[in-house]
Length: 292
Image 1 (cartoon, one colour):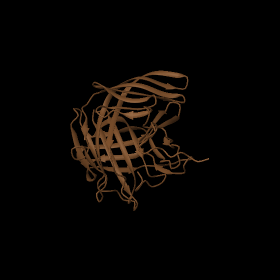
Image 2 (spheres, one colour; image 1 turned 90 degrees about the vertical axis):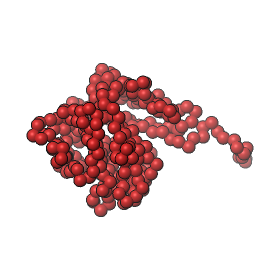
Image 3 (cartoon, helix red, strand yellow; image 1 turned 45 degrees about the vertical axis):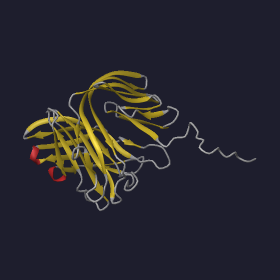
Image 4 (cartoon, one colour; image 1 turned 60 degrees about the vertical axis):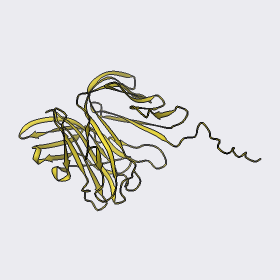
């Protein structure tokens, strides 16, 4: 029995050239638990999509959108979920040179990148049978890129920190196959009023203080760090609130990575401070060079 060839110019309503995906992770240090969920959907039939003129992105009933000055997040799957409203406490800041963030010193690898480093947050968090009223402070990142990592790059270590003195810090280092750091690695220091200062690689030092080996992927990640910004007077110690915050998405070629909560303590010009943050580690469970 033969197959009928579609008429020229005919297209299925299910046809899509864009795939949307999202991850949701929850760290519960008090119970020593970490859980993550993922969804993916084709950009067809209204199943997933994005508005072209404002921040509205959805996958099924997962949704991120702006509502005037506020942002709203909603997601739920298999026993964990959130419904949050976020109100900016600082203005957006551009990273790199006017928002153009270089990722390689030798290749045309870059992104357009900005952040809102503090947002007052309230809403609900669902964990199994529990629905909790929550408040806190969030960090919003938005990055656009059309390029992969350079072939000589393995992955990156990224840090976002909110400090008790009102200052926020973003740093990333791009790791090379020879064990060195790409000179394009950089960061941004955001003061209490939201004014941003660009940081080159020479402006900061990051030293891992330990390691953690995943029983799931067998990858070994740094675990714990000391960060110094000599000119700004900061010496910071970071510790994960849980060692195992590894995300292991499904699919044929999953990109396994560590992304999780850290607590911060340290000093700024001899004044004691604390803080909270998030760290993302990629390329430890297989190089991302040339494929991400």
